[in-house]
Image (spheres, helix red, strand yellow):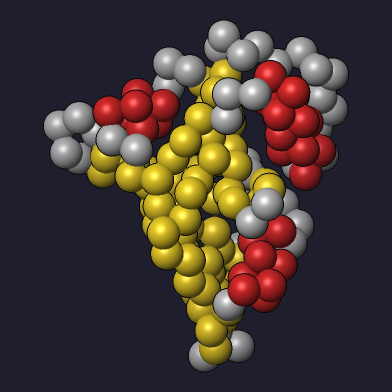
Length: 134
């Protein structure tokens, strides 16, 4: 067992087409976990979601978030991030980041994302850890 830190941790999260599982808290205090596509941007996890989705509503009420990125063929090798979520409000950043997310997962993006319907979420990490079981 080994620890992933710094550049190793970022490289692990950036490899291939891994999904992230995000955990938020509902207004009733229940956990809510869902997989998302994501990219790392300036060392931060960034993902998109529908403006009216459960996760977006949860994050508006309580911005605390946990993220898990694992390796599908070795799921006990993982990165874990705890932090707070902030919305990316800059219009040029909206399209740049949405394009980066689509591209990572092999999808075409034609600048047709609707900022009225989709939000870009940036995870501001408070704690970032990783573990590799070889």
